[in-house]
Image (cartoon, rainbow, N blue to C red; front, top):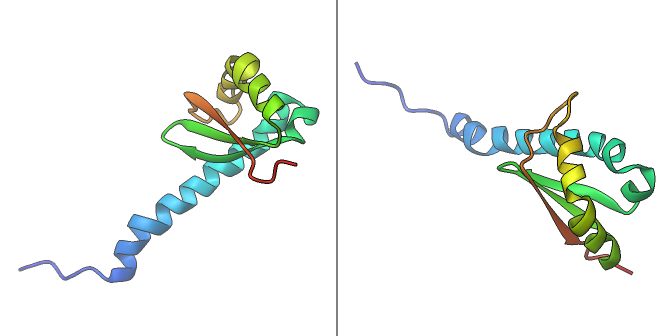
Amino acid sequence: MGREPEKLGDILGRAVVGPARRQRSAVGKAKRKWEAVVGPELAAHSWPRSVRRGVLTVEVDSSGLLAELAGYRKESILDGMGREPEALGIRDVKFVLSEDET
C-alpha cells in the first residue's frame, strides 16, 4: 500500500514554522544573555538581531561603538556568549550599523 499524501500545512510546518521558531528562540536567548556579557552601558546601544548557522549578528547604533566591539571586544563577547548557562553555540559575531543611526 502507498503512503497518503501529506497535508500542505504539515509540510509548511516543518519547512517554515519550525525554523522560524528556532530562530526566534535563538535570538531571544542571545538578547537575554547580551547585557550580562557586554554590560548595561554597551547593551543600551547594541542588540542581537539574528543568529544563523552559529553567527550572531549584532546591530550597533554608532560607527564608533561598532569599531570598538569588532576591534577590541569581539573575542571576549564570543567567550561570554559561549559560557553556560545557555551557551548558544555561537562561533562568530558580526556587527552591523543600525539603519537608525543618528
